[in-house]
Image 1: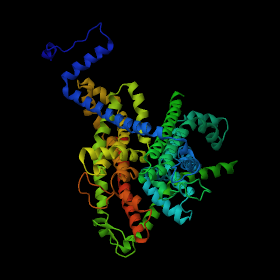
Image 2 (image 1 turned 180 degrees about the vertical axis):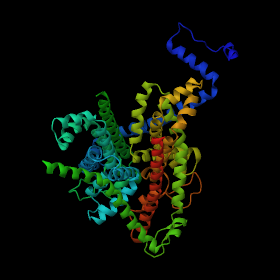
Image 3 (image 1 turned 60 degrees about the horizontal axis):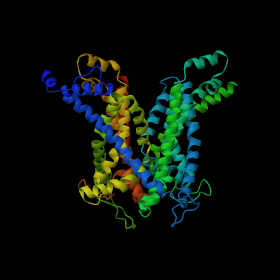
Image 4 (image 1 turned 45 degrees about the horizontal axis):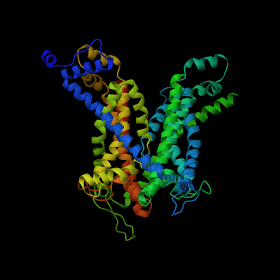
Length: 302
Length: 288
């Protein structure tokens, strides 16, 4: 080590800038432990690769997609000449809303049961945990197959927005259940005890005392679910179908933006329009992520 | 008032049970629609057959062997893991242990975004960027196992990274400090003291990555070429279990359709096994 220093390794200088001194200290340290330095470098490079991959995807889609966003893409009808994305966008909103209408009450209600009513480790709680975990791990194509066999054929809904939305509501149910349960568990017990001691019943306590402080957490879960619904394709191809038109009723087929994008990319004829659609999807996901981050930051502050 | 309390209790319990009902329904419907196929077609011939030639023109001579798709799924998943696994784990360790706080504040939302980008968008990126790149660098059409592995490797990165991050973060600080106090460098402490303690969590991350990769459909369909034959090389096209379903379900009928649903059953069994492994590892990580 002495020889390393003699060979001119920079030494810390009391008067030097802090940044330079840290740099010098690090260099000294790494020279002494080359293997440690190598590992640190590998970790850093891996992070760089990950970030680069993300930036590459985002930049490519936005740079080539946004200039392709023409007003004609937002016309109310889809024709072979004009691959308007507005009908798909509207379908996306309808399917998202429908899925949430089904999944949010079920998920929130179930989470209330798990955290407020059920005894810990009762048979039902364990069964719900296990099945929720299973649901979260099932790939979307399996949901698509199930939705096709159950909602579309057995319940006779046909390829419809309703069938697609119901399939997706099962898919996001575990997300909402888990985030809501976490949010409820983070409410201090003192809140509940205070409410009971004032004479409130269980239901009133849950509704008026426990749910309000947990609502940002629940909201963050809902926003996450919206992101998943909007990005879903495989589960919708055989349940909601690919019709590129505004739906006349809940039982008519309709493609969402993601399905629209898959069809466009598959045809390979309208790369510009596909890029534009991808950009819209990406911007939407970014907005949702930002929103959910904003909400959870608010929770941490409180 | 009493009545209302009791009714609501049941309502909440019922909504919690929907998860159970959903899993039971999914199992019942998949198996009930998939099993009849095996009455007409030998299970062994289905799993080990190397020819997939569905009976589209109703000649009664369909051959349904899904070994190419099983092998294809395994190849693509293994390749994705080779790419995404080490990078994801190392980057997760970097974020959990080495990254300065300010950098972490930027990196975390980026990883959340990376996990949230829809798979069609990844698939489209694959078609427009990765496919031409592979074609230029390695030759061939570009729609290949290699392209699928690259794309899936990118897609499972955030999953593996985030889970590794939380597994490493969950290790008590004194493992790290104790090792430092014994004179080890920071890096050595992390890799020799902290990582072994987080082992099952990191393994769980890898298993979840496998689940993601094997179940991924849209991105693979878009870049893998989808030829239904035994994979012949890294630069040749491949069809996975998921892409078999998605490419043919649109026009399949009768026996062909049942064969596709049976493909779904095989995939489902794979996924259930992976999920089981994941929850065992996760529980082990929590108790350890």
